[in-house]
Amino acid sequence: MPIANGDLRSSVPRQNNTPEDFTRALDILKNEYPERDGIDIHTLTDSEKHGGLTYNDFLVLPGYIGFPASAVSLDTPITKRITLKTPFISSPMDTVTEHSMAIHMALLGGLGVIHHNCSAEEQAEMVRKVKRFENGFILDPVVISPTTTVAEAKALKEKWGFGGFPVTEDGTLRSKLVGIITPRDIQFHGAHSDPVTKVMSTDLVTARQGITLQEANDILSKSKKGKLPIVDESNNLIALLSRSDLMKNLHYPLASKLPHSKQLIAAAAIGTRPDDKSRLQTLVDAGLDIVILDSSQGNSMYQIEMIKYVKEKYPALDVIGGNVVTREQAAALIAAGVDGLRIGMGSGSACITQEVMAVGRPQAASVFSVSSFAARFGVPCIADGGIQNVGHIVKGLALGASTVMMGGLLAGTTESPGQYFVSREGQLVKAYRGMGSIDAMEDKKAGGPAGKDAKAQNAGTARYFSEGDRLLVAQGVSGSVLDRGSVTKFVPYLMAGVQHSLQDIGVQSVKELKSGVMEGSVRFELRTVSAQAEGNVHGLHSFDKKLYS
Ligand code: IMP
Image 1 (cartoon, rainbow, N blue to C red):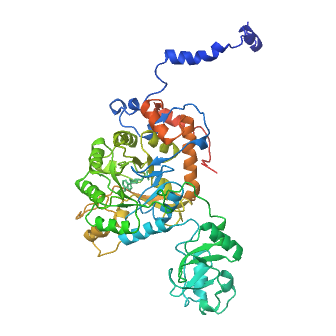
Image 2 (cartoon, helix red, strand yellow):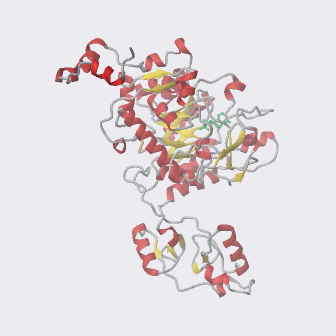
């Protein structure tokens, strides 16, 4: 006779749990399961057993949540001497990091490494912009000269989308301020060939260089003007503050700065050729704090010689070497004196190195192998390439990296170089290319005589070819990535995501994550192919993947 549900329940004798029952689970766990659930990092990364892993091949197991996600600290070193408040680094690629990206990554607590596929002077100017940047002040405003016509000013308004331009004696920054043009001054002025001096405002409210943002904002609020020019003691224009920016002048409490400095930290990449020494001098003169020696295979006599040279000539400059993927490569660069290492070969999203060169290593294996060795010498490591989501960042850190470097993930943001365009499929995209793509190698912004050898000498990025190469062998592709909006939203999303992940793991800081992994309290699980499918969205007819709001 079938038993009704009610009968089934009532057939089990009901007993209240005793205090002993409450602790039994914990006692049994302690006494009968000496090993924690899951596997430790050494079993996970045993490549003899299951080959070299990459980020998608494993998961971190959850721990105990005893604190809010907002209490998770992401402080982490980038070099032996410099610690950042977030572990996010943008890649030295010409479709990723120029001054705008470098400034915003540093404001948000990370770092942008300025690429070198340009002349030394162009790269130094970008370093200068990072060092001169003060939140809220426009340090490179569009400036016009007294001979600019009303028609030209209207065209500039069209081009830039704003119409307030300071007028200086010779039409450049650091020249005497003579007036300001506002959209209203030119809107109904019919005589288009008149010079702007006929209509510009000359009754100006200005502020003196050195003023704080708060003081300048106060003056601007009271003045009822649209712009506040900042001038030096000789009335030369130094910067501009705009009323429309007042509301946007966010405070950046995580900004990457050296102790006792108000300036953002500036990092830039160079090669290891003899003429990179003079490039470095130009960058150091511009205020560079960290130099990255940019090579796809860093364990070379050129790089070792360059590390020694930099350490001896510029003791105050931090040098990051790489790229490396093995302990032996790392040891050579550590012995030469690096302050940090960059890990990765062939894992980048626009990279075909592994396919073409048959050389490289799966990224998770590289990160663990190099970071665990480098940690013995206090040398922080950057996990460079292959980061596609927040989970990959956490895995890179769990494997021992102190920071992660991203190219493709940041290339679609407003702060990366280049313009958005509409793809064939009708989506808003930006160009992204590997620095070893034929495009990038041939694109010689530095000028100089045409011809392949001249290119090899003049182009900044020589990461993927050697002087005298008759033929350029591509190690990267060029393509495009989807629009991601501004890093001012995207990086805080990455940060909140990593904090939530560490909370799930039960560790309250990046430091605790790394020590937990090495001590064996943070555990892992390998993922089969079907486990990976299970971990992704599946079985839905359609879905929208909106990552944050
Ligand atoms: P992503 O974040 O996966 O797009 O990888 C970015 C990283 O790819 C960079 O930081 C470089 O280490 C690497 N990379 C850049 N260009 C190339 C290339 O042309 N070939 C191979 N690797 C590249």
